[in-house]
Image (tube, rainbow, N blue to C red; front, side, top):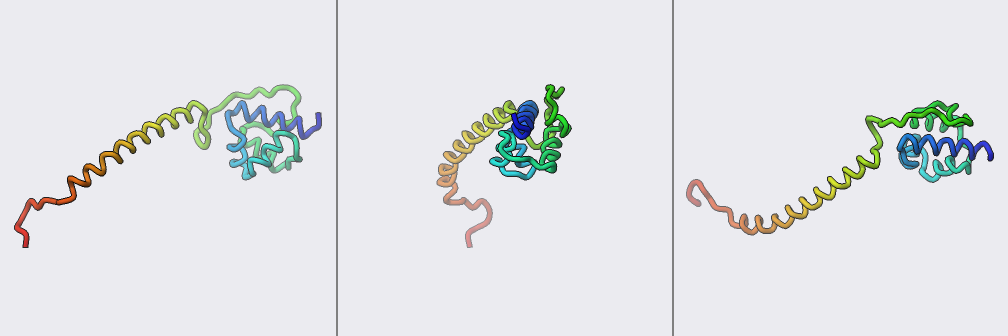
Length: 127
């Protein structure tokens, strides 16, 4: 296996352990998702600058990309930037509930408009 493929496969493994998608990493390092995917597939040479950015995003050392042995990596949850699958599921459920509530409110608006069509004066006489 050539070096690009080995490095790409190692990057893919480390990214998967970190719970990030290719799109997440690509955005973080300022690269298109397509080109980032090519790095993971070993189709293009990756610059040292991009290796450093990828390592920083994945919270690993650049040397981890070149080690033959499995790196001792702990899955970490970041305080910013990316959501886990569980969090995305919770967000999707919340969005569905909000969508239903908005639909209910939209149904109520026409009925409240018709009753509010003729405002009643409470104070003073009409001049």
